[in-house]
Length: 471
Image 1 (cartoon, rainbow, N blue to C red):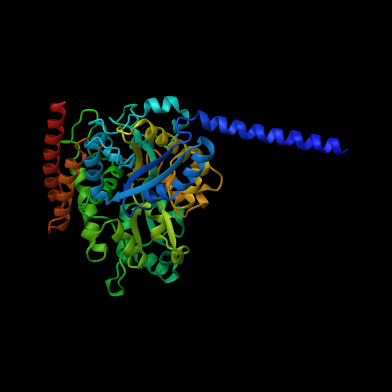
Image 2 (tube, rainbow, N blue to C red):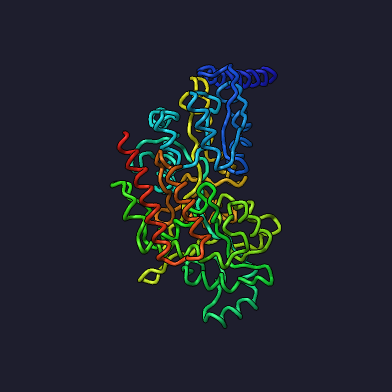
C-alpha cells in the first residue's frame, strides 16, 4: 500500500515537472525571454480611455512574465487633444523611439503614415492572425485603421471606440408636472423611456429644448460643443449635415467645393448655431469638459457628449436619473428619423523607429489587449471596446449605462468619421475658426451660413489640390 502511494506521488510530481518544463520551453523560445524592457505610451491627457491603457499595463507585465518570460515596465506621457499631435510628430520626426506606442486620434492616420513614422500593420497581422480584428462595424474599421480611405492599408488598431450620444435628465422627463405642461403646450408627450427617443427629430428636439429653457431657474434645454479648440465644433456640426443627407467632401473625386457648400448644408449650420438660445451662458466656449460641468451641475436637461465620457457624465449620485439615448435627427418621408453622428475614438499606432525588442513587446501587448477578458475588463473600468465578439458578449450592455446606445450608434449607418488626410490639421483649423465666428455673429440665417461654407470650401479645396499636386 505504501508503494502505491509513493508511486502515485512520484508520477504526480513528474507530471507537474513536465508542465513546468513545457512552460519554460515556451518562454525560452520567445525572442524577449530573460530580458527587461521599458515601454512608453503617449496618450491624451485627462482622457479616461487613454489612462486605462496604462492603468491596465501591469496586468500585461504579469502576463508577459508568465507566458513569455520577460519583464516589462510601462511609462505614460500625455498631452491635451489640441497639443498631442505636435508632441508625437516632434518626437517621430527625430526618428526617436521615445514613445513606443501612441494613442492617436483617428484623423491623424494620414499625417502619421505619409512620412513613414508609424508601422503599416498588414504584415504584422499576417504573422499574428489574432490581430485580424473583427470590428463591430465597417465604419469603425475604416476610422481606426485605414488610410487612404477605402484602402486595405492598416495603420492602427482601435484603442477606444466612441460616438456622440445624448445624455438626458430622466428625472426631469418623468416629472408629472413637466409631462402635463409639455403635452398642454405642444400636443404630444415628452419621451417616457429610452426607446421613445428614436422618434425625436430636430423639430421635436427644439420643442423639448425650448420647454426646459428656464433661465430664472438656471435650467436650459441642452448643451452642444461649440468651442473652436481642436475639432469640438466640427464634431458637433457634422451630425446635423449628415443626418440631413449632406456630405462634407467626396473622397473619390477629392472635391470639397460643391459638396460642403450647399444650401441644404447651410440650413443645417444655421440650425445648429440657433440652438445657442437654449443653452447656458458661455455656450460658444463649450468643450468636452464644459459639457460635463453643466450637465452634472443640473443646468441642462440634455447634452450632446461622447460615449467615452459616460463615467464623468453619470457620477454615482446621478445613476438613477440619467438616460443615454440616441440623439435627434431628420424626419424622412416615410416617417422614420435619420441620424448619423460623429464617430470619435482613438487607435493605437506603433512607432516605426522601435528597435526589434520594443517592436516585439508592442505586438505582444496588442495581442493581449484584444483578448476577450482584457477587453471586458477595459469595459468594466469605463472604456468602450469595438470588437464584435466582445460587444456580443452576454451581459455586455449591462456593464455601463451607455453601452446599449453605444452599440446602436456605432453601427454602420449611424456614425462615421471625417477626413484622414495628411492636411487634416489645416483643413480643420480653417473651418473651426469660421464656424465659431459665424455662431458668434448676429446673422445666423441660412444665407449667411452659405457664405461661410463657400469661403471654407474654397480654402480647403486649395489646400487639398496643393497637396495632391505635390505628390
